[in-house]
Image 1 (cartoon, one colour):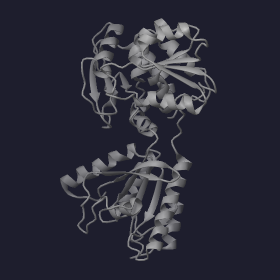
Image 2 (cartoon, rainbow, N blue to C red; image 1 turned 90 degrees about the vertical axis):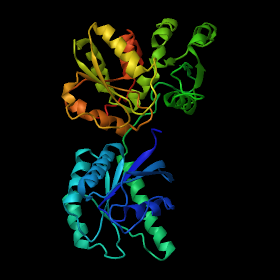
Image 3 (cartoon, one colour; image 1 turned 120 degrees about the horizontal axis):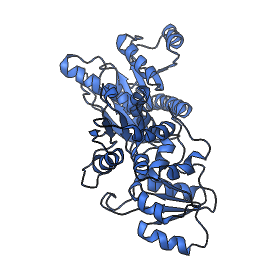
Image 4 (tube, rainbow, N blue to C red; image 1 turned 45 degrees about the vertical axis):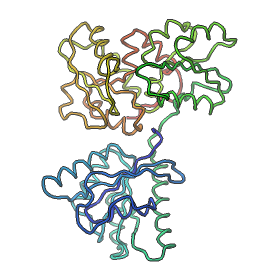
Length: 410
């Protein structure tokens, strides 16, 4: 999921966003109509683009939508900006007015790559002086496009040109992300992956960081030994070769740390995920701020996906109990699920703790935490906070802080 690229398509009503998406996907995905405002809530379509792999194309409501409902549609579309990897901004009639200018400012503020597309060029073609002026003012080349070319081969050429620009721009500006075991595994290394199967484990499958770790070990020519905590002790005693690293699920940190000898590096899947695509340097500093929490402080828990909670839920149950116990004081908690925006008064919180983020991209995760980081609020994630509260934080981060290329992606 984290390797999927998200492409947002923006523009005024009837600028041809839905038609363009249908041409890109080769399917009638988005509803096309001459009635302004046909597209209301963002519509998503998953597809493969050669040179990129899996992508999700998002059709948004017109940025010039009107009325109370229209304003809500526009706001819903604007929220997409922090969730995408590139924006296609469509305009027509050689005209960029306040609506496009406001969007361009939002894209720039969030450091989002953008392609400007002059659409409906079969009706009114792009003027060279307009393209030059846009290039000089905004630094963007303008791509001409039309969805109504009668010659199918010519239409396909336009689609291919636009697609090539998308691929080029994304490859040039892609949000950098390490593999989950970058610098930690080499050919013939034995890597032990401890994967508990309990009430928090997804039914019939492993969680994404576990799957990614197995694949990364195999890709690098190592040996992935996958087992449950109850089998770890007997394996370590019988193993002819000492493993180079043991990785465990966050909830089993305490149990596993008692089994793994000190001379064998130990870390967690959540920490690996945080290092590979999160603001890891901020996590390292922010997690230690748990010691500074005091009576009545408010903490914000961020869940990246919606799920049914139970009595063993990490963010809603276990972490609050562990942190309150460690600080020996009463802490207040708020929880935000999915990718909803952070509260406007983020300064009210003493700390922000993000889940592992296995179901979102690195850019989505960092964009979500950026307001808290800018405000100087300590940030951490589930695995790092659990390790800190159970007293094995320094051991768990040690294998990660000695490797090269640790990236602060903010």
